[in-house]
Length: 174
Image (cartoon, rainbow, N blue to C red):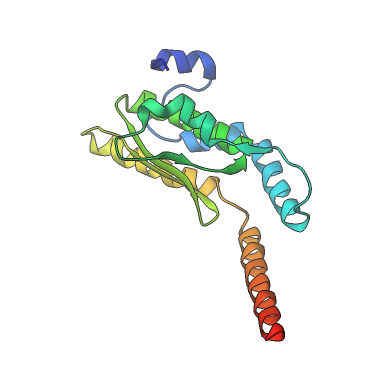
């Protein structure tokens, strides 16, 4: 896989998305506003009716095929699983922005954990201000790409219900 330079991504993004020191997550949020909102609604519906189809797919393969050269030694890179497509698009654009800001950055882990995408990257720069800006953008990104709060509660309630149901079945069979 060839490494792409910053000018390549500017051509893909268009002239409106110029590299900045911070604020990329706000731009991505605005750019994908409608798709992100529809995804949140769809996630809530899926919990109510798990059998319905969706616009979700395994994104690890796509992300790893594009960003494998950025995964540091000893790190696994991506463990997203079945996330909405728009989340993969936002992550991809975020990594493109990060590559412009920190040409030597290293992806350690990008994974799903407790209903939210977690992003662990090493900017590989000595610029403290840039390090802080990247860290702040990572936090904003993790806040943007999360399951609806009540969805997590529904999942937790469902697990408790299944555990109780299982426990009742084992006590009745003895």
